[in-house]
Length: 394
Image 1 (spheres, rainbow, N blue to C red):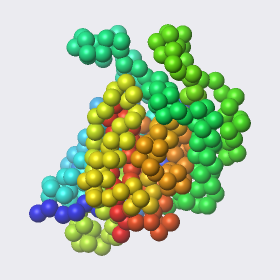
Image 2: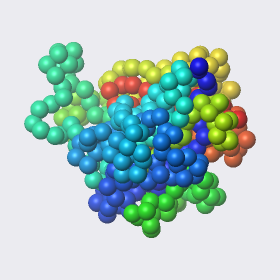
Image 3: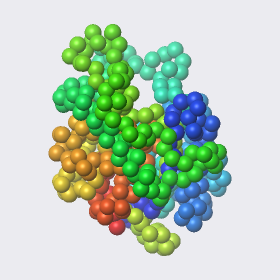
Image 4: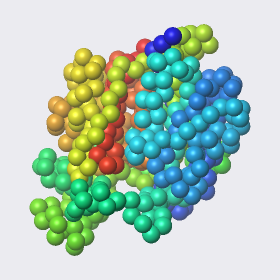
């Protein structure tokens, strides 16, 4: 029998800088993930044998994050060995895709209770590690035939978006400064206290290491472009190179998890659902612009839900780069005050595989705090894809 899928709880670690010396860099990514899995069980009075499946996102599945890190984390967390687990890679949207898969499985009647989430230790498994492994390129002969000039990295895609949507450097830096201001205010107000859980192996990690209170547009203006090379400048002479480390998301370490179940199971267990899912969508888009997928994904998910952008009380749009949410907001007619109201990845970090469920928790907590009813979450993804979902708070 099918049943509506609901969100009961979301947790995450604080995020640490994704480089040696970051506050979580001494923690193995398996153990980061195991900690949030344990927290979900303990907070909700569940036994691990009640969990039908564990779906975790992780992008760089190599080294310490190899061999199905979701299964490794389940075992490290002390779960019953009969609990299965799998690891998902839809690039930056990996843990949001885990949410989609789990909720769809619940709605189909194949699951009762699923833990979803994600993990990425960018200090221990640096960005691009899986691409650089070995001496062979993932760009196959057939792919090169279709794209003879090759595809570009996400930073160049962010530059192309800024150029197309006429987003100047001041606008990008102002957006980034506001992201830090909103995140710092959220921490001061205790907004994240409900969702952020301690990391046993890093007891001093109590807040997000990447939030810089007092960041100003003027300070960010002094940073140099991050992605310009002579080769790329020759290939894209129209670009004036506006993307810097200051208006890009931070490389971070972190893990997050969410507890999903059928509404009837929540009622049976005496657990209070926080929200239900209204609609899902996933799209493919131009792999060169790459990061504009949230625009068509938003349009389609709104159509599926029978809603307009004005019917949403908040939207979490992953801040891979400042140009992404700014272009998205301009294209779909979104209210800037409802966009990432508690700060985004520019301030809070982007621990790739973990970001989807981190955004889910932030969106839910904001709707609760503001008394909002509906929210949208969408993420751009490597290769030109995007996930989008709409949820409704109970």
